[in-house]
Image 1 (cartoon, rainbow, N blue to C red):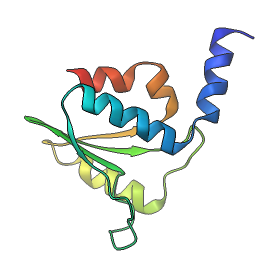
Image 2: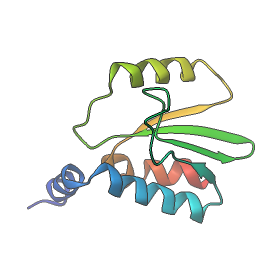
Image 3: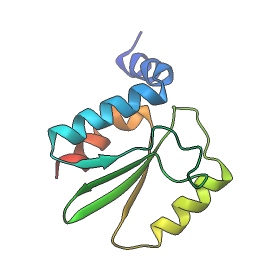
Length: 108
């Protein structure tokens, strides 16, 4: 099996919970504060999974499995948040972890 195929297979197998654990580990390592509602029953539908803050930067991240799809509510929130220049908005998938995109985003 090629390295590319092995990475793709690992990405496909990664759960959203595993991705979140990896993102939060990196966030702690690079000094970010973060918030993630454990139970979002009373929260507005579609709000991104994570709010991360390390002044002067603030970002929101929706986490998805490799094949996960955004709901209409998530897409609407992301579209509105992207119109706010002070915020960075991301939809991260396991491939963004293995490719280094998340690491690069959080380390600077």
